[in-house]
Image 1 (tube, rainbow, N blue to C red):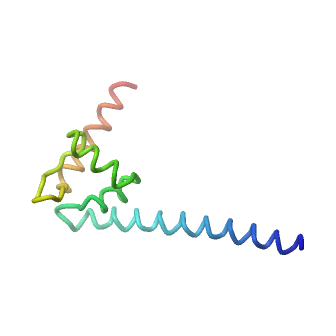
Image 2 (cartoon, rainbow, N blue to C red):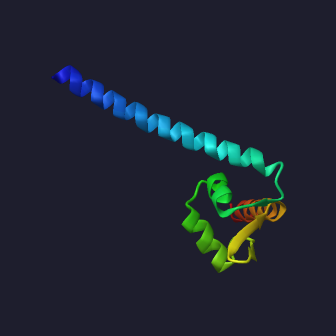
Length: 96
């Protein structure tokens, strides 16, 4: 019975690691897509930034992330997001 419990624990650990690896690959895929797409969806930006879609929506509503409305959808200019990230990095370096 103890060996079975150990196997179950090992399988759960492997499942968590596999999920984390899949999420990392999704983020990498989204970042690679930044190089070929002019705009991003909420889902793509959330994956690229490693945050939830709700966080992206909230930041877009608050004007924290540069965005545009297209009907009911938010879209994000690739170049505006890259500039926003660079500006944020500059601000952090000034504070240090």
